Amino acid sequence: WKKMIGPLVDRPTHPTTWSYHSSDGMGLLEFLQWCEDLRMEPVLAVYAGYSLGGQVVKPGPDLDPYVQDALDEIEYVTGGTDTKWGAVRARDGHAAPFKLHYVEVGNEDNFDRARTYDGRFAQFFKAIKAKYASLQVIATIPVKGVTPDVVDDHYYSREQHMFELAKHYDSVDRKGPKVFVGEWATREGTPTPNLGAALGDAAFLTGLERNSDLVVMSAYAPLFVNVSPGGMQWSTDLIGYDALNSYGSPAYHAQVMFASCLGDQTMESDISGAGDKFFYSVTASRGSKACMKMVNAASTPQPVTIALAGLGSGNHAAQLDTLKANTIWATNTITNPNRIVPVRSKLTIKGERLEHVLPPYSIQVLEVDLK
Image 1 (cartoon, one colour):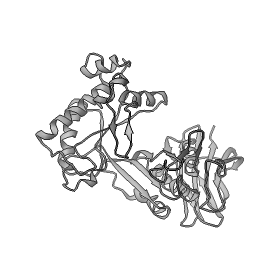
Image 2: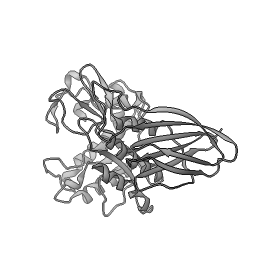
Image 3: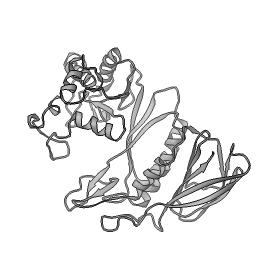
Image 4: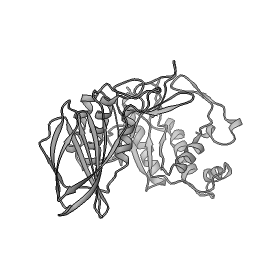
């Protein structure tokens, strides 16, 4: 990271893991400013001694320089101008420190065949906590010896497995670390996800929302794919683009739908009549709105009876966003970008019960006005 700050002309460039050369134009400061522009907080991942070629820096004195490098990086992000690296950041054009709550030590260290991550993580964890006690330190895999604040889970699976994973966190022990699902996607369709992938994603997201006391964050991956001939390096990717145009996949629209209605607490709810391909979560913001996410991954309509405790009697205005298609293979493309997009409708809920029918292969977000 130290070679990716300062004047652009002084950055050396480097070959990347994904077989192309980086200009280093998107360095650490540019990334932080991008987060700032989008009103996001970064998760700072630091190199922890394991490289994809299988090379490992063993715990102990050999690892010390990398631990110090991580501490320097955190200081560059969060330090005042009276610190060494905070002053460097100010010299680079950003005097104010950035907000930072999470630091991840390494990435996918399950590939380390030497099994050194327990020791490497402990060395980083102790050093980071000694200087930055309030930071949440994320481990890339479960570790022994010290207890991380958060563990990063990654899932790249087919649709059916994502349906199964929708219930995974229902039974996870709450006494352990929190969870960051830092990479995940339903891999159906290419170059971008089809509706089947969107159904898998949405089902999985209901499980994350339902267990948000445990799962503190999630991040879909990868985000973009160049759909021009020869431009794709991985499938499946959320948003497709070429030199002139871009489009959102059905899975992209599912993400937007889920993000458009968020509560700050889970809501007591009950649904009867649902089959094994129906998934849901309910959240609410007191005095504002209730948000119900529903997924029908079956090929037939799904009638359900929804009981929302606490709504009270009377009529409640609601809006319903629906994403659906006639087949799970349906998708959007660069030439037909709006084949599958959400459709919004209005409805009224009387009392605390709603008799509702979900279309086949559909994702719905029901927002109820509680004002």
